[in-house]
Length: 107
Length: 115
Image: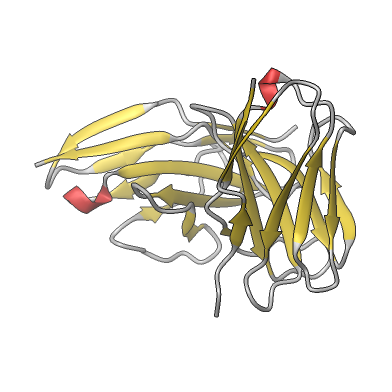
């Protein structure tokens, strides 16, 4: 079975502080992992995917197969990063989402 | 290039009724996926259509059905509505070949309320 766990419902950080949004997954095969983001009053959009190995808006995520994790990190949080973040896995089905973490960056 | 559009924006139905939700794919995309997002939850995969054929289905009962048309637009039909069907329904389109899953582009969603 495919499963994605995001343990934190809400994460509040101060502007300029480091951010880490946790994501753990369960899948027996080789998964594709994604982070999707939803800013206020906007639609869900792709932030980054592990196979691209990109840094988008200062965010990075490394797939750790040993720990089955795909945590999202940013060294210095900005107010515009406040949003809902979803970790998602693509294995046997297009996307299995976690429940999401709301990131609130405090000025 | 136009993005994914969905209609209607909001809908209120009563238990036992039937509903049809519509989605227009992003230009050039041949695959449509539907998701249900209950309050406080992440989107949950309902099914996907590729070239007018169902190409994968999540854990939803048969009263959830769909169609994809030659222009790649799509419909989600739900029969015998239940209170728990109240949710945001998201449509996502992508350019895919067979079972390879590429980046999905989401629509704004249709908010369904079942009374």
